[in-house]
Length: 578
Image (cartoon, rainbow, N blue to C red; front, side, top):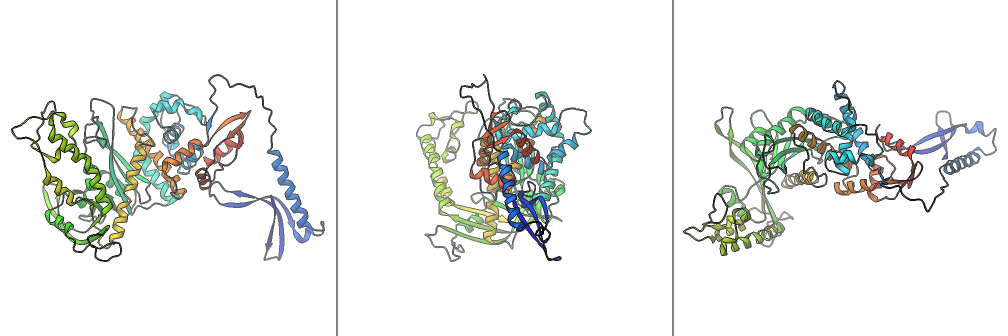
């Protein structure tokens, strides 16, 4: 505490108060809190010889008294033993998750949507546990329920209630995503001019497919049934909208459903969608740009799959420039060029017939020696396997020749066993195929509707796509969205909704801490912010780091104290929920 002097210009007088520094937990802004009003300086001078010195001493003693009240004398029995099965350690890092959860108004959303339902369990409390657990201790719903005691919350529901609530969450999943979008836009601002889009899939450890979990091309090359997930993300890397699709749905076929939902219900205005070549079809391009639509795209474009005219353009060194903007020579580490072009695309009309439409786009082609060397290195093992396959075909079957078989001519497999068949012609290595592929090592192409965008801007915009790829990696790895321990379709939907909320919260924590730390490091830190019951209602903390300080500063939560009373812990948690 200290003596604060405020000069009032209108009266020409000075007013004295004893004040204390205070950080507002909502705004995270440091301000002064008046502890005691003293009066006008000129009036106080009639009572005290030196009121400033006098009240500075008063403020010092008040600080001393306050500090002494926070000092405890502990009596410790060094022979005291732990009770059998004792597990007194509690997590406190989840206060950061609760802060964002309530800042986003999720508690209000779930309470309001359950208001007219017949069930008695608290859907907000259940979702809060599932989101916290998904971030700090991912696993099954049963595991989350069993570990609920590691937090300071009163989770008053049964495991059966958790499973019942999943069906309710599935019904309101789309509405929740729209609600979250509105909250993020209002509270943090949102960049929806650029939308990143990608598709991944999640396998299920089952043998038989059903209407949702179907056999399809697995990203992990697994033979299990899968579910496809398409996701749109905003320009800051924060999830915007997702949908689940049957496992046999092609990536390109998910695009219009999700982008259509974003355009219709997310009030984005004109958007530029960034996606990989798996999405680039005439139908998807026309969906964005054709007719009355005036949206745009930045898509990667297959060099090896391009027309002979395009390949010729790529390999022709004419027009390439280096980092310095000067014509690139043969020893350049990097080169780039671009052109505007009218290109015909095939579009499926309402009648079902295919029609040619012309799009005017910019094509950007670049080459990097680093990427070329990486491609060559990655191919070496595959080529080695192909040569071994030619030398001893009997060692292989169709399942284990993946990747290598494309470099081998005259290769036949038994349809039932997958074994290599001995045909009339002996298999041989296709050196022409290898030579053709090597031509394009290190070359990448991007096509865009944004004709006025510079080459550098186009590449930088496209590079942002790594954020969504990293988002899927975090979802599968850090949040352990797989394996999925539920089997009913509505409960599968609810499982991924929980992952979506958790992912959104961790991305917002990253945004609030200026993207200094990875999702993994933040989650590791929040798990380490834990305490043990030292005595009676006193809890002892043993972890502090640069990351915990950054999270605390960003969210207005003090994670620096070594000891806290139970009442103080509960007050901090209560503040986090405002």
